[in-house]
Length: 264
Image (cartoon, rainbow, N blue to C red; front, top):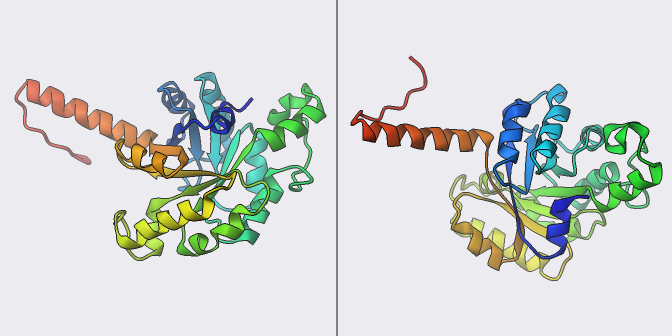
């Protein structure tokens, strides 16, 4: 059972993070930190496919729910990630209804999509799970998260969320701000209007809204707008922030000047 889906269906928010370091142990540590889900992030290109399955296992062992962000909207990559055990798939750059249909076709079994039946894969417990259970679980439990990262996607959002099988739309502020020509200016008028447009377009829809939080106090703002699926930082970001603070704290105790370095 997908615990994230259960929480979302009950109206509760979920909070997760991204795993970018190609190490199952790090993924397990992050999973044990209390996040509802951890996304094995393949888009930047740090993690090879040989690490994905063991990172998924590590996240499961930690009691969190494993998701995967594929590097592009490619049916082969989507199917592969699901068959390795991902309970949700983040698909970047969903800009049109046709993009959404391509992702759904790979992620969902008929009649929603055209995902091939492969009971011998890890998602089917290597054949130990009845095929009918894999079919049921695949369409009901595996979440498809469509990334809204371009102004074209905001314009086409009504058509995107009308595609059956899209479970969550995820607004990516970094790429979206770049698309509007205001990279990193998250409070810019264009970004504010984009978020308002997303909220208005999805109002009354069954599709869940998600986004990335830069600071904890943003959670109240987006919760009021109906955003349930929330992500913060990454294993790299969390490691950097915690080690930086620990170094600062101990240097203050011993009156040693704080000096961060990238090498010798």
